[in-house]
Image 1 (tube, rainbow, N blue to C red):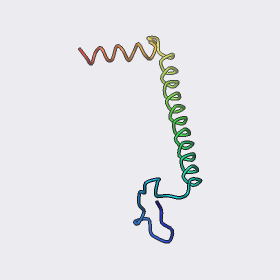
Image 2: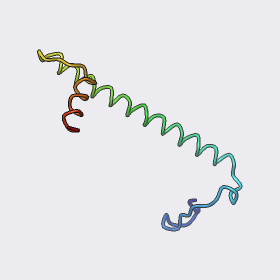
Image 3: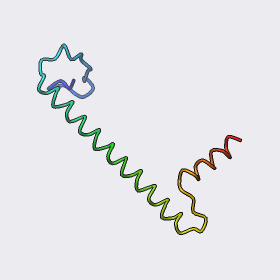
Length: 80
């Protein structure tokens, strides 16, 4: 809870039952959910770009193996 007229050092966590502002709470939760979804989508795109670059680089090589097969070989090597 950010208290109006007080510095950030006086912020506190308050139980929802102590607050009488359901509209503000809902707006905060909706905004937080939206932000989390955007971050998740960005991470998914970043991951996809990384895999795409990997495949492009592998296609240029003669000994191309799909990503999962290469990881399996690597894991078997580490575990033995």
